[in-house]
Length: 312
Image (cartoon, rainbow, N blue to C red; front, side, top):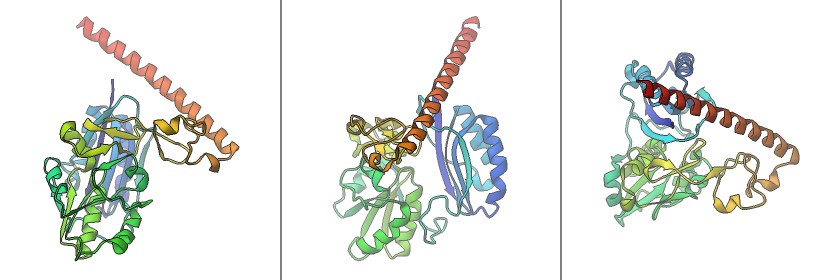
C-alpha cells in the first residue's frame, strides 16, 4: 500500500481567500489528507498526500468553485508518508517573488515536456534554473545556469545583475512544478525580454513523461516533503534531508561522523549546540515511533483487505 501525492497550483483572483481556509481544512481532515496548502489573493498552491480516492475527492471539492475548476494535478507515489501533518496557510503570495507581477495577465510561452529537449538544445537559448542553490546541487538539466540564489525572492536581483534583454534573446526556464516559472517569466517579460519560455508542468511532469533514455535531466529533483528527491518516473530518490538545516544529504554526507539522522549533517554540525541536538534526537525518536505505528496499521489493513477478498 502506497501513498498518492498530488501537486497543483493556480494563479487566479481569490479576494476571499481567507474565508476558504477553515472549510478547506475541515474537508482535508475529513478525507484524511496531509500536506501543505497555501492560499493567497493571487491563487492556490498545494502538495498533499492521502489515498488516490481522497485526493480526487479534494480536487472535486475545490472544483465546485468555478475559479478552481479543473485543477491539473501532477501525481506521484511514496511508500512512506511524505508529510507529518496538514497545513492550510494564508500567505501574501503563493510563491514569494517579492515584486509585483501578475501571471494571470501574461506569462512566457509554455513548452510541453516532449518538446523541451529540442528547445534547450538550441545554442541560442539561455537555459536558466530558477530554483534555489540547495535544490540545484542535487540535479538539473544539462547546461543549465545556476543563479545561486538562496530564495526565489533573490531572482529579480539576479536578473538585474546578470541578464540583458538585448544580449539574451531567448531564455528558457524551469522549476520543480512550474509555479515559480509562471512568476519568473512574467517578470522577465515586464523587464523587456521578448522570447521567454518555460517548462509546462515543471521538472516533475518532465520526469513523469519523458523516458529515461531520452532525458536530458541529470541527477535527482528536490521536492519539499519527506521524499526529499525524486528521479526518472517520479520515483523516490536516494537523498535524505537534514532536519537540522533542511539541506539534502547524499550517500557521502551520510557516511560522515557529523551526520546523524534527524539531528545534523556536515553542513550544520558545527552550528548545532548539544541541547539542540538532544531536542532533535527526541523529535527523531517520536517520528520513528509514529512511522512504526503507521506501518503496523497499514500491514493490518492490508491483511484485512486480503482476507475480505479471499472470502469473496
